[in-house]
Length: 516
Image (cartoon, rainbow, N blue to C red; front, side, top):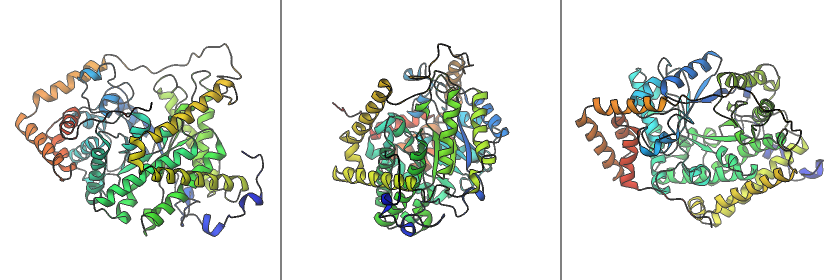
């Protein structure tokens, strides 16, 4: 990176074409004319652990402390479609998120939380269709119609093949599930964001900022193509697309990344897909501070890292933000750590003054140069992916995965050599050991969860349950939309694992491509 930028670095820069005004195409300066002067971003705190009852208590606490939207973390068995009493779930129940096996768990999770008043984001992918069905079913129990529900379901399965690995079905079957959710929500849940295309996990796996934008948009292009092939109107479903980005350590690069991403996506939607509705051209995104940058050594330093990253997201124009806890390199966040993380957002929003000015870095030679470079670099990578046969072909060939792994390797070498400084880890270290409180999940909770799912199976009406699962299987073998029969199945008390297994029988399971 050059130490200085000036007019010579922006010779091809056209403010009218590349910047315009806030709320106007290509939305470089933000999607709202007034940005945070109208209202602040949604302050979400990602949480979930143990049983639904325990997580419900944490949600109520966060809401009492000023959180304006919930963000649900699910445990690994729930994410990959296994009930808590499955042999593969042993030791993982409730560990990295809340365990959800049935509608009874989902009802407890949102007990006392009015779903027509709270926006909920759910980080779930392979089993997204089941968790969405559970949310709809619990809303009905509360007397809330699907049309009144608001929130987001991540539902971004392609990044699982690239970065996380919590997939179940092969890519084509997974895309069919995604587009069924698009179609159902377009007709029945107009306030629901049907997907949150996630660059966050790609960045956490080691990608660069440019790769995060490019590979996220490669996946998004595949989703838009699939939706159009299913007969959906880009000007309609395009309004409910949302994105999820990482806020990393390089402050100015991150600000430029968010600006470049907005501009590039607007141009893709307009030029490639012919979207004419401005809302279908806009990039709406949630941001989370970078968990991969947090260190177990000197954990209080993480408060500063999170504050810098959160400020970059706000100046970059995010619509929603989660700030990580200082202790997340060691365990799930404690209540105190979650409160400090939330207060970080509140101080930025109410005390720093940055919310009073829209896109304050616009016109900076350096930031505009970085914005151009990130857009150009991402566009070049997208061209390479197209040349490789498109996103699915690039994933199946391991091309995108190799790019991320190579970047991660280079970044780790820089840390190991000391070229990249990590305060408290490879420089400015101490011999003092951390003594901060660490959150512990009660090991007895797994047994309680196992007993709960077995009680549900023993008490339900077996005829209704079997008929509902048969209807799911029938829909999967045809072109029928899967969402309605899955809603009926969860209302008949079919479990997450049973519904996932029913789809496994029809679609099969995906096995990871070898990158040798």
